[in-house]
Image 1 (cartoon, rainbow, N blue to C red):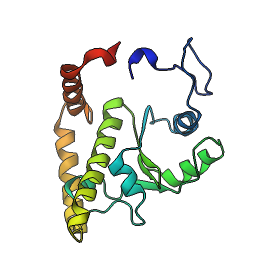
Image 2: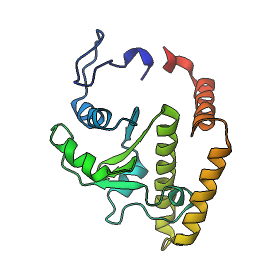
Image 3: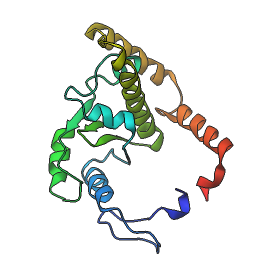
Length: 191
């Protein structure tokens, strides 16, 4: 995946520039729903990682059992699997299930995160992904230990205060660091 093989489309899925690539209908339906109806959803990310899908397949979903899941406790919505997301009418149900949250576990399907900026959406997705990875790594070893609600509240408060003390937007410093790591490995994604 590089910048040059991305397909530039408008909110209705119409190509804005010539491309050799087709538009992924499932990606379009899901992402355009959020872009169209949520003014703060400037960036929407969706993944099918092993750990994310594994948690999406669990009846109880994400447990509040680790540093990362405690950061996002009570901030994750759930949407039941309806098959591949190619029907526009599913958009209404996605929005209803999302509510005021900006993280979603698509049951039996994967993870979704959004933000006002790319770094914000990325850090939300990264945190959700890490929470899933830790949960799936710990679960086979025994019963997960839930973080008490009062500790979750303090953890979230302290995480917010650390972010608000920064002169940078949420996730910007972390995102920049990840970009530097990727660039050191291979800069061809920029082409």
